[in-house]
Image 1 (cartoon, one colour):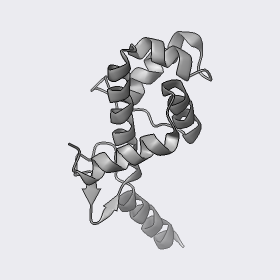
Image 2 (cartoon, helix red, strand yellow):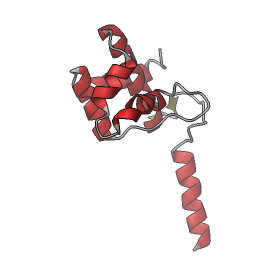
Image 3 (cartoon, helix red, strand yellow):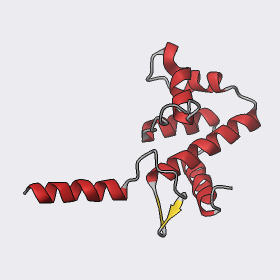
Image 4 (spheres, one colour):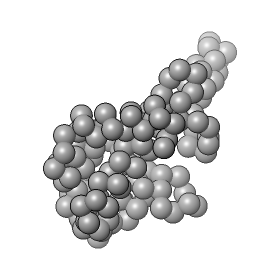
Length: 122
């Protein structure tokens, strides 16, 4: 029984790469959920720049489930602005809130993120 548990843990570790893994976004014909999330964040940052909205203002109106004093810090952690710690993951609810704040469909943002991933992150 112990070997099966170890084997399962090992498989989970190889299927879902750790955040410290700096490999390509496209690996062995599959996209990792982590790379999709990073591409999604990149699209959101580009949309904010086009709209001329500050990151702080965006965080205050998007992350309503977080205490008001730490909303900007939450968005900073999602962006991975602090290189000393790993980026914070997003839930689907947060992705929907982000899309609503931008006035875009979540499907459109995810489509654009996959497009970035297919082009190799360019």
